[in-house]
Image (tube, rainbow, N blue to C red; front, side, top):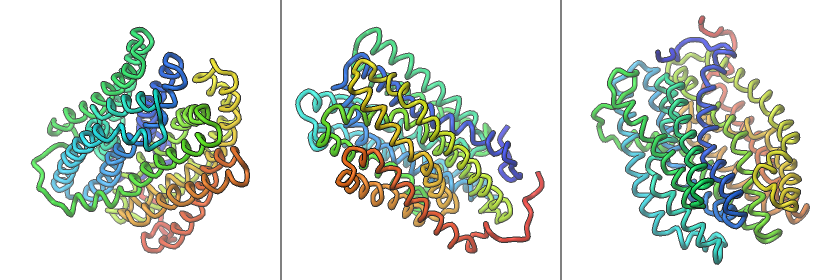
Length: 452
């Protein structure tokens, strides 16, 4: 049965509701992590560096799915909260078609521009050839990768977060098993890793198409949409912060790789890739919670239930605070074992990666609040503030930090750049939340949450 988003959510109910989405994000991250494991251990560190170099460019294109999913789900959930299910279904159907169409165009363009992109990012020789090959193969399933991101949010809005989890588990397991077969057994290297990811993304983006084509399966299903450009524009504006975040994170990743090539060389890029693989799991928890809880906030915003909005906000901040401390401690404790999974075959690279990871893990104390703040304003259909937070976090604070900190602290400054960027973002986000509390009513006193 679909979850009733109009009810009051206790802390345990909120965790239970968002847990499938958190798991979805973790399994989505497994695509890259599993590829990295098999590529590193079966194809070597040059292939690993090639994948790490080109992957941010691939994610820039895939960020369209995050934009349509988060922004569109906020709009659809708000419409459901207003009581207009028919309109919500039309919006939903239109946005899915739009996401697939844009994904197809981006895939074609990405294929032709992948080789010059690899050279632009600093790759040469064998590394450039392998980066181009992997990037082009990622374009084969790009439309479905974009749909997969979009459906992660829409499953939550449909009140079916568990179904989204099952789809991602199926896609993730398929990717893992096929990586083992194609890379570990057949020895296909980068081609095998990319092909396994292609099939996983086809499952992740294709199965939901079949599910939502079944009428009455949930209160959201495909209907004949009306072409309404304002709806597309509103959804894109709402979700622009999430797209900005993903694009900016990819650009920061490119800048990280460029700096590391200058300071260390190929080993630096490989070490950064290992850190990103493991950090994906930690950030997926925060991102999954933000995406999973946002439709609840959007629904209550549409229903003008300020008491429940305030309840959701304070519970979320408390949960994120606890998770932040736990993840920081895990990062310190597991730095060595996590690095060894990927680069145990190279003692110098293992030592570099372990030291770097312990410094990088400081960012977990601030990352969750920065991610949630942006998603919070997306849920309130305030794409401008949400995008501003995301823009400052990545394209201003983190870029400035990764350029300036190495001048003062050397290599350590590169690993601390994300921490500085996220800490400054938390300060800005707190100011926005306080300044706009009266406008949205989530600090209004004298009300009690609705009864369960």
